[in-house]
Every structure is written in structure tokens, then in C-alpha cells.
Image (tube, rainbow, N blue to C red; front, side, top):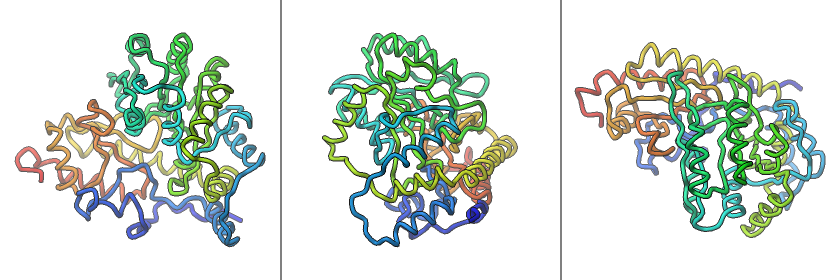
Length: 400
């Protein structure tokens, strides 16, 4: 049986399918005709092997409590070994309905109300939400944009914040969303050594680990034995195979005490067995989805290059930050002279686009927009064309 879903140029109408990306613009206060390239959700059919596995499971007609045994772990283990050269053990695995759930459980398990948790703004906004909504304080070791058009870590500030704020928990985003960095081994080890020295637990969100276009993804916990002992590594086939609607995440916690505390919080939250379809999809994706994955990755790489060239040639005052990983591109509009509110209005009301405003990733994201390139080339080109047509006259006219 051959892979069938390899036509990434095909435009699929997702409207009217309960689709968060396409069906909720009006509810969010946006024009209904905006073109959405916001949430990290691909507009591609997933691997036909996943579709077939789900269809076969649906034919059984009974959807009771479900669980998996060792073969599931072996499939996940083999994917991690093949793609990330990381050896995992079965006892480390804790399954959750999504990485954000795991982040929230970690906050509850490893900190107390009022404690501070370290993040690196601008960063995936649920990081801040699960910290602050659980009564903790988010402290930022804010990344800075270098002359090489990439974001970097201020390591002196990183250590100072840990020491001064008595940090016991650090949320690492690797690869980083939204700035697209694939952290080098040296960068990870500098942070890791500091965390070991100060007794900081590291929750490493590695959900975008399968999207690397420059450099090599390094599993933080796999770099040193002492990192393994302080790490909670969050992985999922959800981004890689576009399975967000059937949540499944594989969380690896080698340290027995950290794993026990994490499981205790899961139990307190009433989370036990996961939906059977997520388990089936994960097995099918990691077992048979390699051809689809490779083709999808190559297509997105070309989309990112297309975006880079288009921005340089057609969008004066806009700069695309160098994208090393993820399919989410970080666009810097500060050179256009537009204020933050003007930019928001231009994107939504003139360009008729639904992107992710940089502000939601932290105030340091003001003047930026995040755009999702995991879509057919024609859709991406239309979005960029809309920006091109919206920008030239924005200095002389109102943008709403």
C-alpha cells in the first residue's frame, strides 16, 4: 500500500468543518473573509496510513476506555532514536492530552503558588498563561535579536534571574516558537549547566523537534546524564502529522521523583486514559508515516524559502527573521514605520489576513507578526500578495 496524500499543492476547503483556524473569525471579532495563517495547524491532509488506521478503528464501533501496551512505546522509542538519536526507556513515558496540559501539570508539580517560573520571551503564549493562571509568576530571560538576524540568549541575565528570583522551574522552547531558533549544543549546555548548578527543573517543549531546516535538533535531556535527571521532555506527533484535533503527547521524565510528582498532578486533575484515536494515530504515524513526513518537510522548506524571497523583493520595511526550525515564520514590520495598532489594523482590515500578532508572545513581540507557512503554495502566495498590496499606501491612509 502506497502513501496517497502527497499533493501538498491541493487546496482543501476547511470551512464549515468545526475548524478553529477557519470557522471562528467572526467569533474572535474579525471579518469573516480573512485568510487565516495564524494557529500552528497545517492545511495538509495527514498521512494516508494515519487516515486508514483511524477508519479501521472506527469500524469497530465501540469506543470504550482504551490504553496501550509495550508495542506503542517501542514505536515511539524507534522514532526518537531514528530522528533524534535519543534512547528512551518505557518507564519514563507519561502520556498526556497535549503538551500544554503537561506544562500546566509541571507548574503544579514542581512549584508553589507565588513562585517564579523562567521563560524566554517572545515565546509561545500558553507558557505565560499556565504559569500565571496557576498563581505563579512568569519571569523572562528575554531573547535578543542579533546582527546575524537570529535571536540569542543573554546568558548572564539567564543566571542572574535564576539566582535573584529563586527560580526552580524553567520552560525551554526547543525549537523555539515563534522566533524559529534551533538551539545549538553549546547554547543548550550553557543553560543546562546553570540549571544543574542552581537545582532548576527544565521542562523542554520539543513539539517542533521534527521541523528543522538548519542545524540539528538536540534533545536537551540527551546531552548529559545530569540533564536527564532534571528534565521533563515534551514530545508529540501532533505538529509533525497535523493531529491537533485528536490530542496525544508523549512526555518523558527519567527522574523517578519528578515523574511521581507529575503523575500525582495528572491524577488530581482527573486525567487518566486518553482517547483511543490519538493512540491509534500516533502508532500509525510513527510506524508508517516516514514518506509523508519527508515530503511534507521538503515542501515546507520550499515555502519558507519562497516567503524569504518574497519578503525581500516585495515588502519594503519588512524583514523575515532567519528560520531554522518550525513552520512558523517571524516577520519584523518595525521598519515600515507603522505603530503597533496601525500594523494590527493593516493586517486584518486592509490585507484581510488573520495572523498571530507578535504581542501575544510578549510585549517584546510588538511590531512582529507570526505567519504559518504550512499551507499550499498558492495560499501562501495569496497571503503575501495581500500584504504587498496593503503596505505601499499605509503611510498616507488610515488602515482600517
